[in-house]
Structure formats: structure tokens, C-alpha cells
Length: 251
Image (tube, helix red, strand yellow):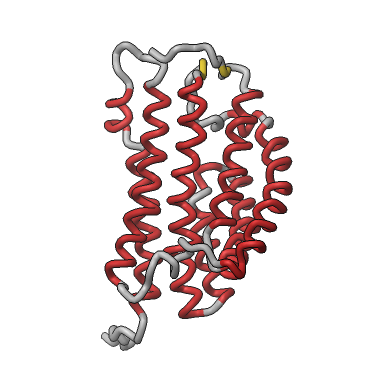
């Protein structure tokens, strides 16, 4: 019996290419399985079935997403590769590209907000959004929803447009880096349906290119937050069973 020889040696910079991909897999998987855990979910739902049970659980999953996808992988990369820094992964302000970043944040927000508004009203979208399914939203629910999406998407973009993108781009160039990035990014949208999965491809390509052109994460973060907030609040407005009551007291 014969086997084809395999070279198991590690080329130069192999870990710098492989670790971000593995951290993306581990980070998203950790978030996903914790957020879908029935045992953890049960801890938030008491026999009294208070108004905040679902709100608190969804907010908890957003915090888990920030930690599992954003914070821990970034810390791991900084520890494993001490020659890198927060600025290397896009957490910085570059005066030369700040105006370009601001321009694209405005332009993309103007483009995606109307699209999100009209698609969020569709019955298919209302099956999943808003993610907080509490029937009567209070002010606290409203603001926890906004803040939860913000911190979650900061973690999400730190992972995909920071930890994953910059090292691979440095080693293999633009298009292979984008291909790897967008493939993994789109795959995380599969549970949300074919429309979000397909839509993640062009958005992912644009965000990768603009992130590399500006050297920062701000376009990706703020455009993604604008998209999520618009979708969430539009779904709240048009959902037949979920309503906002600013005078409601949480119990």
C-alpha cells in the first residue's frame, strides 16, 4: 500500500495565516452555541415570566458575541503576535483617511438605510426581527436593543474586518483575503436565510476593500450598526404583535 507523501513542515508565517481563520471559527462557534443553549436560556426565564426575561437573554447573547468574537480573538492575536497592535487591526484614527472614512459612512448609510427599511417590513423578516420578542417594549427594552446591537457588531467587525482580514491580506494579497473573509462572513448568515446570506457577499466585499483603503474599522462598524438599527426598529414598528410603550414599567 502506497500513500502520497505530505509535507508537514510549517512554512514561514504559516501561523499568522492560520490562526486568524481558526479564531474566527472558534469565536463564532462559541457565540452561536452559547446563544442557542437551552440550558442557558432557561436561566433567564423564571416561573413569573416577567417582561424582561426575553430582553435580558437577547442582551446577554449580544454581550457574548462581543466577547467571543471581538475581544478574545483580538487579545489572542496580540499575545501570539506581539509585533502587531490595536492600530494594526484597524482600531486607530488615521488623519489622512479620516475624511474618506466619514464620506463612505455617510454614503453607505444613505444607501443601506432605505433598503433595510423596506426589506424589514416583509413578513419573512418579521419572523426573526426584532430579535427581542417581548410584546410590550419599554424604554429600557428599546435602549438595550440599540446598545446590544452596537456592542455585538463592534465585536463582529473586529473579528471579520480586523482580526481576520489584515493578517491574511498582508500574507496573500487582496482578493484571496477577501475570498476567505467573505466566504466565512456569508456562512455565518446561513441560519438567517438565503436573502441575508447572499446579501452578505457584496456588503462583505465593499467593507473589506474600504477597511483596507482607510486602515480602520470605523466604516464597517458604523455602516453595519446603521443597517442593524434600521432593520430592528422598522421591524418593531411594523410587527403586528410587538409594540413600543414609552410609559411602560418593566417588572
